[in-house]
Image: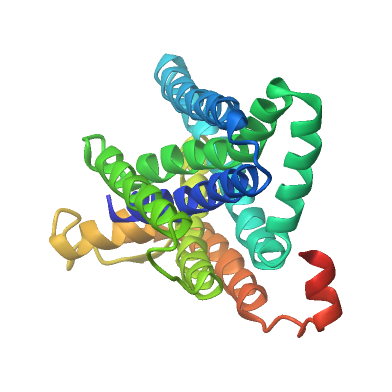
Length: 277
């Protein structure tokens, strides 16, 4: 629930900021008549994202037992790839995204309502699809088959939408660079656990070796049903018993990715910032 709340908050706020930028541009350019078309595109993106999540669930339940772990592992690896690309892209593009979106909307308004709707759809569908895939894989890796992951995701998205609206109304001020830095750091940790669980799935299916070669096993000391184990498993996707290959994958992803993400960015000149805007 906590991991999915974080994902919903991070991804939801990105989508909310995108919609806010587009709405603000329409208001400043005097084309508020195109708001309905923009919202239609956003609604279509939300629907497609929900259908993608449902399709993943349906596909996983219909697959044979031997194939389902491979499908889940492949989806998990895709989710890790997407979220890694996303956090680095937002880190790099946060200064220029507003100008890029305004440029796209300017072109769309000149074409017509359909183009405005398509701009809204394309701008938010990517966030929605990333969210659907990552939420599904995180919930599956945590082993929680109840409503907890869905409730966590809904709470995170609800808070993100509220923050986006408050930012649009200029009712609150948030250091977005710091927010995306901290949430990006947390998502990298979650993604490392998802990758480790993907390795577990592939070992379970016999695709990877070493399924019985454990790096550690503290299940005799820490019960999997204990509150501590459930929190660590639910948030970090780490279990009391993990294979050597799982730990290698976890560390092999977490350490270099975290170092690269936290590395200071080059200081941008005023000319570069003005050009990006």
